[in-house]
Image 1 (cartoon, rainbow, N blue to C red):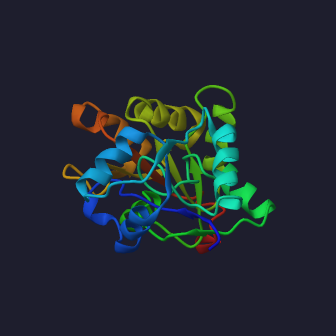
Image 2 (tube, rainbow, N blue to C red):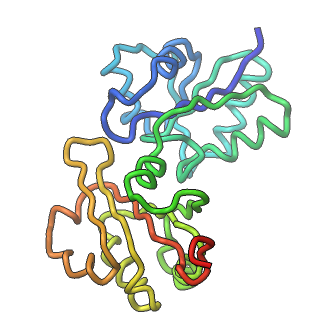
Amino acid sequence: MSGILTIVPTPVGNLEDITIRALKTLAKADIIACEDTRTTGKLLKHFQISPRKTVAYHAHNEQQTAEYLLGEIEHNHKKVALVSDAGTPGISDPGAFLIRQCLDRNIPLTVLPGPTAMIPAIVMSGLASEPFTFFGFPPHKKSRSKFIHEIIEHPYSSIVYEAPTRVQELLNNFASAGGGNRRVFIVREISKMFEEYRVGTVRELLNQWSDEEMSKGEFVLVISGNSIQSPENS
């Protein structure tokens, strides 16, 4: 039997969001490659899955570990499951390099449908979702200004991930770049117990940022498209 790489999405919040197929895949995997073995270990323990083998696969060892995993799949016919700490590997998490290598070498792979933060956020925002653009995490310093201006000028709804310590800075960046009146939907802790969202213009949200609770958790921002260029306003 030939080996295969399976990309397995894991919950971004509530553990019950995992699919039955994902659990079966993890239970049958010869190797589970984890962004953090401790985080994945908690998930496996919760669902009473005893993995045959787990290995760390993260941004700092991606290429080296990819070679090991590819060898196990191709030559030893192992079933490898790739997971990140939360969500779908390859979307703002390690995974794209390993997937490209499988495609280049004709090594079997499949991706399971499952949790990701961007889809609930764009649906919950009520903003135009066809089309939308996912920008991922903003750069910290280099190219940050270019990144901000690109979103301000973008005709479609934009989705951005950001760390809690940088959300206020990001809103200030938008205001300084001329996007103070742009409508933004912000949601934190998607599918978790303390899920919370706010909506308003950039300036309105900045005025609300005294609330310390909104400075904790994982954030997704949905920014409305440039109304001047938007097809629905042309």
